[in-house]
Every structure is written in structure tokens, then in C-alpha cells.
Amino acid sequence: MEKKNVSLVKLFLSMMTISAFTFGGGFVIIGMMRKKFCDELHWVSDDEVLDMTAIAQSAPGALAVNSAVIFGYRIAGLAGALISVLATIIPPIVIISVVCMIYDAFSTNVIVQTALQVMRAGVAAIIVDVVIDLASNVVKTKNILNICLMIGAFVATWWFKVSSIVIILLFIALGLGMSMLKGKEAA
Image (cartoon, rainbow, N blue to C red; front, side):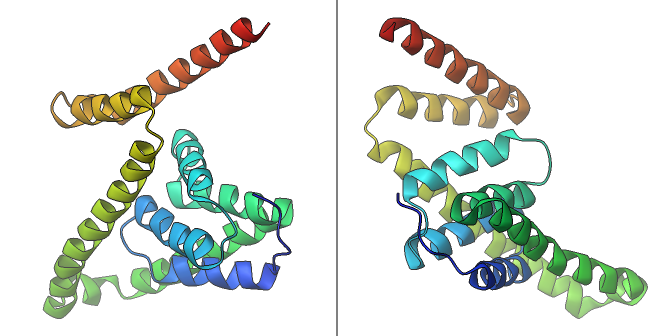
């Protein structure tokens, strides 16, 4: 995908809005970034979103921040990465600071507790939507190996309770091994 002339202000405001109104963690924010930067603004492609998500999830740290760095860098280089991270961390810092100041009243309030319980259902639905989108992108490639690996990873984590860390490390090793084999075949 060709580099587009991107407004850093628009990138900052987009990331801040996504961060401020996204509840549920990294996968939810990735889904929102995909909708904004791929579907609406056309700054990245679906394939790039898949690749960036894999990289963000493989790196240590918070998935939302990792994704902001990668999306921002892909969209507008180093300045984009810095602006995206700043925009992504400002809303949670402000919200958590306010919650800490009024925690006692917040934690015992029945209305707040009910709202949080209802939000869990919405967050679960958004995460399922993101998973379906990402899985459908893998299926669209029609690469049997990738489809089998995706299914195998799901089975390993869901039924056999294999740690996601083990899955990620295994897939990194597998990807590096496959790249080395392709390099040797090309030589």
C-alpha cells in the first residue's frame, strides 16, 4: 500500500478517540483501529492489520500500546508512532487517576457495578467480532497451512489449556524456520 499524506493531528485525534471509548483491552482497540484506519480512512490494508496485530501481540507490553506504536509507525513513521502512543495512553491515565481518587465511592456504588457487568457482555461481543474478522482474513488467504495452524492454536489453547505465550513462541520459531527454508531454497 502506498504511503499517503497523513495529518498527524487527525492521527492523534483518531487514536485518542479510539482509546477513550474502547473498553475491554487490546483486541477491542485493534478492532477499532482496523475499522478506522483500514475501512474508513484506507491508510492500511486488511493484510497489514493482520501482520501488525501479530507483531503487536508477540511483543512484550500492553497490546493497545504495542498496536499504537506499530499502526502509528506504519501510517506516519516515527512521528506517527510517538503521537499514536501519546494519544493512546492519555485517556486511560486520566480515567484511572479519577477512579483512584473516588475509588471507595465507585467500588460500592450499585449503579456503577451494574454498568460494569453489562459492559462485560458488550466487550465479549466486540472481542468475538475481532476474532471472526481476523480469522476470516486468514481463511481468505486460502493457505491451508495457515488455516490449520490457526485451528491448531485454537484447539491447543481452548481444550488443552496451552499458554498463549507457548503458542506465540512456537509460531515465531516456526515462522523463522520457514523463512530460513525459503531462503535456502531460493539460493
